[in-house]
Length: 400
Ligand code: FAD
Ligand code: DHB
Image (cartoon, rainbow, N blue to C red):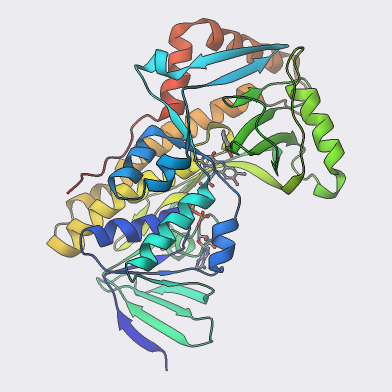
């Protein structure tokens, strides 16, 4: 017989979306339980995003999660676009009336929120198995899981948030025929590394090179993060460290500029995909973040979208479970999908402009170069990039 308890909101997944949702709900007195199938250490070490839109930073500050972010985050006012042997600066502040972005790793956001939630006495169950959501056609959906000691639990909820990422269970628990999914695969992957070496650049460099895309980003003044376009089914074993540095030097190199090398502490290959599932809700089951949508990483949008979703969702759930008002819950999916599709277009556009197609189609290559030339010479085109990159349609959390 399973242990049976109640909570207001059951949350599946302790990634940035699930953790932040639990924090936002608690700020307005709404209880939640978070269940996560990985360990706390794994969640805190999983290397992923690093670039935050200004709206994301402002949200984290407003809700009391800005202390370390303000001390350690690196504010950037633009990016470099490199192609045809030239490096051009896109100045976001000048183009958009002062907008900026911040480098602060997803691992650090996850650590900050876990610490804040546990200090507030929250229930986060790590290392669970057999997560299930049930009774979705009722006003009291049920979340089931087995804890790390093998004890089965059943939590009766007023709503469930599926924040369980692309490979989670909540999206598939929606009734057959409800969801429409659209998808686009890309014929390349990213090989990402973390290296203990000061960044060789003050702001990110996105480089279109005839032998493949490369990106130089960073984590701290001592740690660099770099990415290389590789074939979609590439084997990481084919990339010893000296081959990685050689290729990064080749694709990012410019006369008079030096790429500093250092020990590689982490390397992994990530496939690229666009995916959108809609609607993001069935009755009292709500999807948020990567559970509902995936973008290729070139526009740095995935984490920002996940945070925006749960900002909208928290307000909707507070109205629903505390005040009995379903209006925001009814609007949730459409509100999020406007932003999701803007980010999906921007990410597809950045990806298509900067990566080398494996077929080396000369027509595509000429279009890419024309587009890059336009973005780096036309103020209107550069402003479009700057406005989308720094965050368009930010979600707002009202303090107090
Ligand atoms: P996740 O972080 O995937 O969290 C989901 C959680 O649910 C996980 O902890 C998982 O273990 C758990 N879970 C899954 N199934 C179950 C289950 N059955 N039961 C319990 N728990 C479960 N985005 C940006 O905005 N900027 C960037 O610069 C950027 N760079 C990226 C670089 C790379 C290499 C990658 C891979 C991604 C990048 N992203 C970036 C995307 C970003 O990391 C994701 O969009 C973000 O992690 C989404 O957060 P989430 O909470 O929705 O999902
Ligand atoms: C990072 C990742 C991205 O995909 C991107 O476009 C910018 C930055 C990063 O990991 O820092």
